[in-house]
Length: 241
Image 1: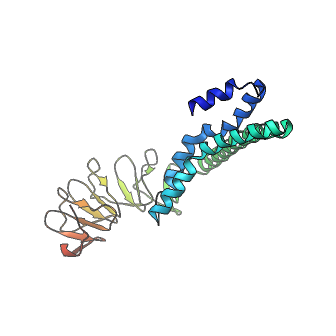
Image 2 (image 1 turned 180 degrees about the vertical axis):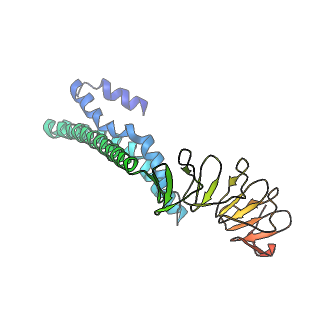
Image 3 (image 1 turned 90 degrees about the vertical axis):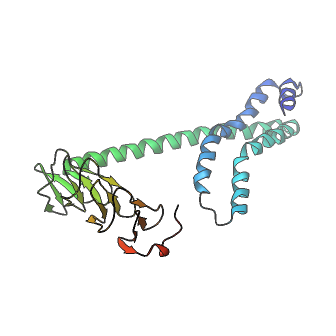
């Protein structure tokens, strides 16, 4: 491959200006890392592994297609100089147009986001239905008396907090030990004293040994097993290590 590239530049049959013009066909190769990164996520959950790997391979060897295209365009140039020159020029124009379009799209998206954030700040909108107004926190027009508006923030779509309390859907959970509280997943959370499910204390759960089983509604401690916040026989749980 290296010898062919060197021979391409050493060839006396092709004018120097065309050699460099023809190489512009390789411009799309510069975004190969982006294409590779994108396809990893695009093909992340294959229904058919063999087919997915095939398409993943076909897409990511696209630089080879452009190298072949350079070779074919060289043949075309030798046959007709005008037609052979048009293709790389079109590649340059389309590449510049694509860069301009992408840049403009990013600029417009960022501008729109900035304008929306400015408007949200004016209205006191925090998110998830929470609004800061007159140094108070509201959820769907209902005031949350316990919330400190200076330190209030959203943790996720269920939980929020200020400097002293955690709130579940806007309701303060007074039993939570603030410093040791930890969100798990699927509605589970715990601190040094309790395990919680959907903001309520999960009875008979040991916070020291309780773990959530990833990807499920299940959890267990050294003695008991739980599913969706209810104590169940451990035999009904998925395999756990």
